Length: 625
DNA sequence: AAAAAAG
Image 1 (cartoon, rainbow, N blue to C red):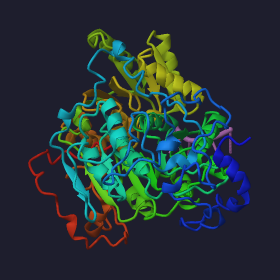
Image 2: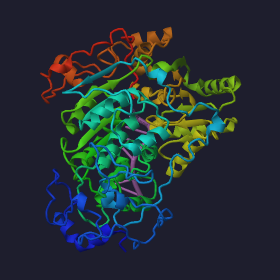
Image 3: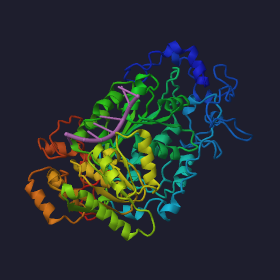
């Protein structure tokens, strides 16, 4: 039951492609054997007269989804317009109409299929506004992003842009940017977009909530629309050949990235599919079969799909790791290596690789270098770096007093009544059991709470998050599953009921508030169990101009040499390549002697960027997201 | 030591 032209042709040629998904052919181009013989260059595709091609429009495919439909009068099929538009000045044709995107490459995945109605991802965007009051979702507070320190290193760094207009992203994408109410690029976008449009590999550090998702999505979408390579996918039945892969450490974050990417690619013809564990795999398989250009996934499910030979990475041109430091830490590294190095992914230099996070420990940077080719390091912070917009408090609370203390906070918050708006409170605990227990206790005490952690079913997790976001359950108890990346508007207060052991985790957790230039409050409960964090926490707070309680300073002093945070002290993000020449053998948290041998030592462009001297407090270093 | 990620 082939569902597309591609499938039916694949049936004829199935033998030809049989080796395609096997682990590893390393370089692309190795598969250009028999299944290349039918290659038809873009300008000849979709010509009804072509004997080797299907008619541009086929009604033959079974309607497999409610979204499928036969287009009405006056509408066009993507398959028709896609290759037809003139390429003007290297720009992007939008096919002449709003409804017809300019995707130039991916018609490979939906030739012969009637265009499916694309759900308008902007439709129900403002529904929550009544609940939360106005002016909250109208975009980003750019005033909070002025005068930020930026550091780049690497060869020939493309200059930043100041507006979206000066970048040639294409009409369709520009229209979506407008729909998203993005007026101008955030700092990380200003720098990262030109870098990745130039085809360069990138390691980017930028604060929580500063627009990283768009920073890697825009160039990917734009690049796919240009589709200069126009490579035909091998014809292998039921195997998907995405052009871009975006990996993230949690299912909910993958969902969120997928939702964002859908908005950015609306009516561009670029297809985005998400795949993650805990959800039925069948729907995901169907989505993949219907064609995918950008695959957003969590590592476990992707490995599963690769092993089932339902996805091949051999056409990957863009690889993005969100929360990259997390993806490369002990828990994930083996899976990531498998995906990136042991399957059929093109090697660095052939694909373009982009790593994003707020935090980038030196040892992780060193690991990451394996995945990159002549990359540019970018660190973007701002004077009021995100931890500056977040008021951080630390309170000494004995283990046994935590619950009643939390209750006091919640009562006070309720009393203060945040102007009738729902104020969401996110409470982090250390363990899954602890999350269940605290949720139960809160509910028993008439506080509307729900919880999210890895032992809950995916349905429960998503339900909890939804209920929290809508304000239906304004208190969410969470483990670190919710620490990174999740963009939950209106979180007014993050409570570290249990502090994490790693300062970077703390940075990510408090970054759930104070997003998009808005302010936020973070309260931490500290006691003897957290002494190992004292030094780093104290330093971090000081760097972000927070008031450090005297007792915490004493804890920090007592814990002595403990990890003091950033090696540099300039402003947080540092390219380890710049330190390795003189910090070699050092053992501070972010420093450390590495034997990086990538040949960067002699690069002349590593001088300190001029112009930032007085622009920010030199002590402010942290809070990179 | 805990959490996350496949089933």
